[in-house]
Length: 423
Ligand code: AMP
Ligand code: GLY
Image (cartoon, rainbow, N blue to C red; front, top):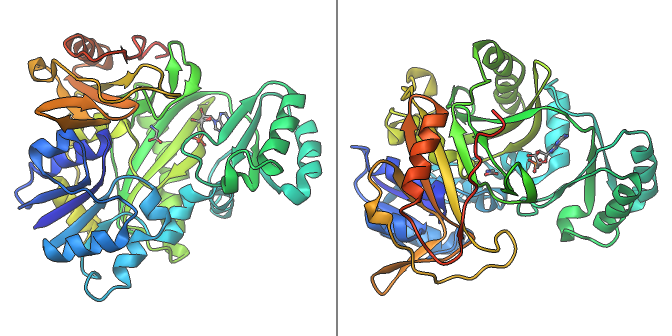
């Protein structure tokens, strides 16, 4: 079958890398893609939210499956768009309905869902401009640090963690009254701070059945020792060494199963990935957030470990028969390191030539913000190239990735040299 992947990052290059290995894939299209996907698939210059252009492409190229990488088209309802169109309704869309995507699109909606289904999470209350004073009073009842979350999508920047109560009140005011994050912060969730170590869980569901993919841990801060600004992610390892069988059983029983059952009970059409951000508090998992897609760069560490044909898995998602297939994994560890443009996550330059990609042989290279220009590969974003390696444990896998990354070069290239420091 012909397949379309939507997106242009390292996550989408990884999807493409797996999909072209499948016997079930004839032609793969990626929209808009990057210089990495261009080597293995056909890039089409269409934005991920341009539904009418996507429809035209799907009909013209006889595409039977669409794999949605980022959250924006999901939150905008791409899955409903396909289902409600007579010409598109039989196309398998890997990604939830607009209602399901609210789990990521609204923090308040996610918290209410968690409470309705008795899934462990931080205590919270939400506030609007009209209740900003109540919000400040609520802050008085909490202990530092204070966690403020913009309700809507804010490109990963909508969560503030503050030590000082006065600063927390001021930021609450900024978010609600001064619309610090635009419409995304018209509502703010104030949450109990959870103290522990984070990990990410990935679930593939057809709305009734599910398969749990390998765990991962990503490194979000730009600076070593987890300091500085938040980024999309500077690297990831899979599996997470502290997620042992006992802990995973708790996660399955207390979190994954009630989540999938809750979606089914509420008749929410959900065919796609659920990415659950967790914190291990003492010995117990608590949900910090849901995302309705795979993580980036977690995908670059998780998917290469999946040996089962990805397209076959997606076909079972479409047919709601995930209970009839098992997932086979590479038992080795994977470690991904992301190289970024100097200045990221703030201002950075683009168009710098990237050299050394073809001299990497011990690792897999996944392109993120890259494009080809005059037969060269140049930088085209903040996160530029991810390098993934396998080995017996995550430390050895990291070592291999660090050796490979030394071969890469572009002006002002930066990467964190301390991944795994906390494990
Ligand atoms: P989110 O966008 O919800 O993933 O939040 C971004 C980051 O903020 C998370 O990865 C955590 O590191 C941190 N965070 C969010 N909520 C909490 C919480 N309740 N307690 C502690 N840290 C949190
Ligand atoms: N790496 C975190 C995310 O994809 O949201």
